[in-house]
Length: 67
Image (tube, rainbow, N blue to C red; front, side, top):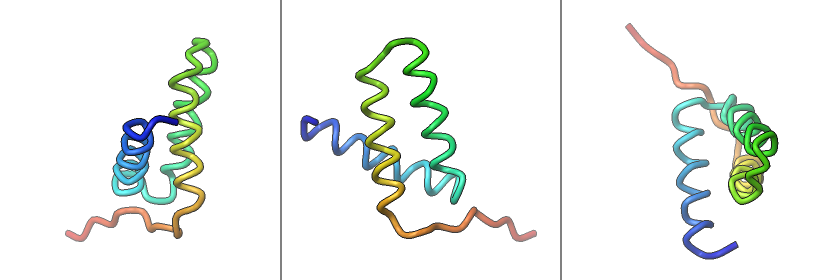
């Protein structure tokens, strides 16, 4: 994977983890499946890498809203 793609995948993983907490991997898996369905294998590779990064990361908690 080219360096710029790796950086983009890491940024995407961080953004998903911040937004979705423990559900981030599910979101990335759905995006990967959509890319497979469209036969867009470059996008699929990106989302697969995002999933790998998320699985290597320490668990995160879902965002909490305090009123």
